[in-house]
Length: 91
Image (cartoon, rainbow, N blue to C red; front, side, top):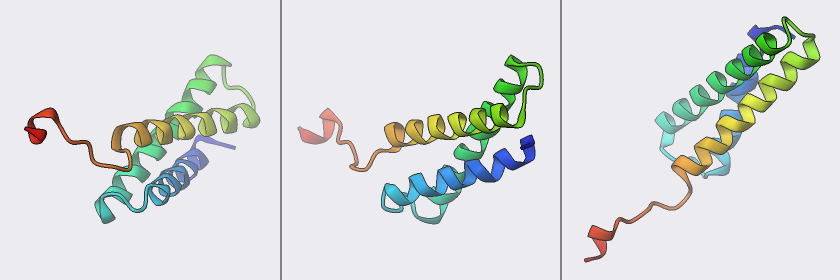
């Protein structure tokens, strides 16, 4: 697996995360989630490549999956399902 494959893999992670959050943000939310997933997967694959001096295809795939999952978790924590209401809005 080369670094080129990690981008589409991250797009899939972003799409699945967007769908799991019930389409949060509409079309632009989909674009944002897919972009975050792709960047996370590419960064994870490059980190594995740098850590293991090139490494094998399996290590690159593992890094891409790890980066995509980490990006998805970040999206879930940052954009969550329910909107948050600040303390000023309650008063």
